[in-house]
Length: 197
Image 1 (cartoon, rainbow, N blue to C red):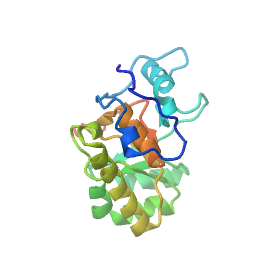
Image 2: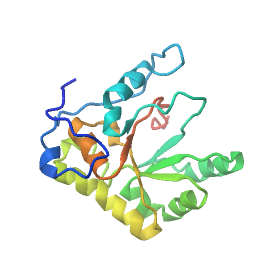
Image 3: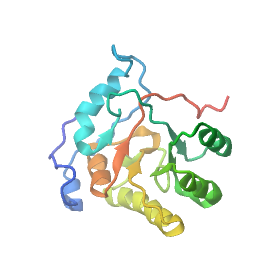
Image 4: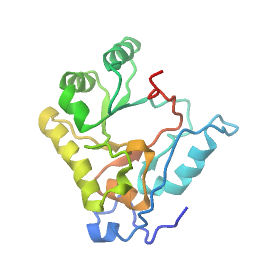
């Protein structure tokens, strides 16, 4: 892992774009954890939480008997209404990370998520296949904030959680996301539901 060129302290006042651009921009990728520690947590998540937690990043929640259920609503396969039905029946809240395409094409479901007490997170405007670090810092900012502003304008909802498309991030992008008032949320277990077969 490359070390950051400079270390900024999260939760301080917003940093300038120039300060953020001084950080390491090399892309780091994340995927599902599979080797578990003695407490049943993916070892990679434990290590990454220690390494990147200072950048307002979550790979794991607190070590307690709780599961945080998240769904990426980029290009899902039409199951969200049924998922919402089950969550409502079981009285369970989840986080739904939405893209611009999803918000534009499924506004009724976004309203329903909000009305039923779920958290809406930002999954980017364009969901770049090459990952957020493939974009310039200003393009990353615009990609996050365009969706942020649309959801705020259309639904009166201010998102605070961000999930990286393809799980690709960098020190630079972690600090940018934090400086925009977001917390980066990764996943501890990935059930590969994107494989439609």
